[in-house]
Image (cartoon, rainbow, N blue to C red; front, top):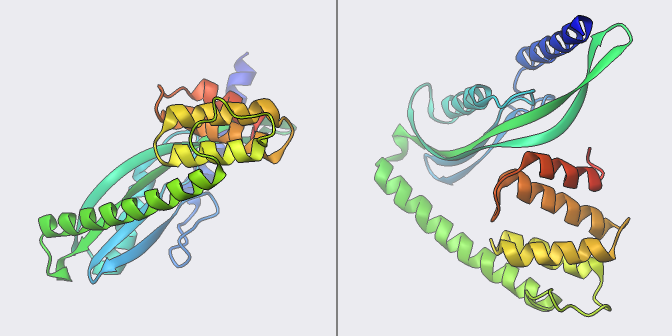
Length: 241
């Protein structure tokens, strides 16, 4: 028992060292351990940015924030910006088999912390309130356009009601409708479509995609209480674990 605990402790330390010693590839916005960033200039001096922490056995917002700050200093100059952080979340990334001792490898769960928001450079000429108002106008416009496109695709596939779908409706059709409904935040209808797809398409791409989507729903708590244990079961069915 003691040896087993030592192996696990050593494995965690090994992964910690690997994660800490990795450097963010800020030119490409990606590191080999899953950290990095992406950004987009919305108008001069105002940027949308997403920063990822390195993949570790725990949620490390500190590393995501370090990447965020580094990129902000590149875009605006050192400490010449304000932050508008819109969201933060943690994604379960499966398990990593880690060396613990000669001939011994230990599977560990791994996670990836994400920060998403906006950077306002002091040189932009905008106040923070003006920047937020501009961001909201973009969001509303983009949301309206995206929703219209999603609804159009949904109707072309047969609409939102999968509960009475005929047997000649394919698993692929039902899976796509389910995913579109989830993207529209119509979770109850979307889950019905996904479950129908799973019931008709075991072993198919539609089956795997529907299981993965259900795993994501339970992981993130979209329309239902978040439950990582159930999420893992769906990810296993999708062949991801």
